[in-house]
Image (cartoon, rainbow, N blue to C red):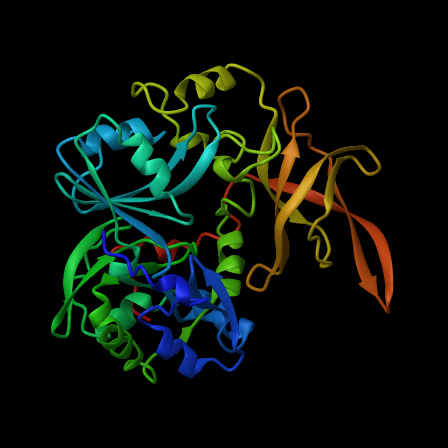
Length: 398
């Protein structure tokens, strides 16, 4: 495990790309992500948003928690840890995964990379080392933190393929969604995965921190031929909502961070029942999840299109106007590309079903006065935004 044990002396650590972000930043609006300093907004939110949806965006992924899992029992260990059946996962592929506690409540979600026969990388939003080590008891497996040893960039948007090809990264033509390749950029190696958190065409690039600035400069050398913008967390929040992606710790409480009983959530309750495989054998939380599946659904994180254009942050959801309160909005945005008011809400079911007549009650400020109003909500089962070009192989050149 390679960790700088003096990093506590810094309020916020700098990623290997920090100097480039800092040189571009006009807002100086910084966030802390897993002790690293990253931007909320680099320059202008609208410009960064449309870079993802209409051009090419670059975001720093270095702070993402990254764990290397190796050993003869690596597959058996992960099969016990995760709710998903990974028996079909092969080297060079990535899959989305969730893991739970014994009560079947979600600890976190993430992506699992199979790098070779007995080597995996698990990426997560939050610190997971304690849980991973506890779960490793009895397995011939090694769990190593590599968060600080790998520099990572997300290059996302319709022109991402064209930009990376011009930047000197060859071999992307046949890289399918959720695929991984070890490639070269100029004179140094870079691992490229066709993954992302934007719901658009995109890639994630993984390399040694010593190569970070050379990788950045190779990408931005294409500026002029294509419009490329560095982006921050505020843009990511917008596009992940449009894609219908949930964020543990924000849209729901992670099990290990929940204090009050009943405020954590199971995969079924957050709309992730599709990554629970009860037939694969025992895994942590299986007994509780099997019992839950036999009962009528109690609640669900639900995607909503809200009528009107007023922000509905922290709105309450009701069964009918002036009806029974069912839940609350967890995240919301006005979508510039869809021209729609989008939200994801935690909603209690009635008799095991989502009521059809949903309304949001919320407050908004106008001319220094607070006003209360209602807006009709329409539940969605599919992503709000899912362009065809995101999965084309090879991607279109723009």
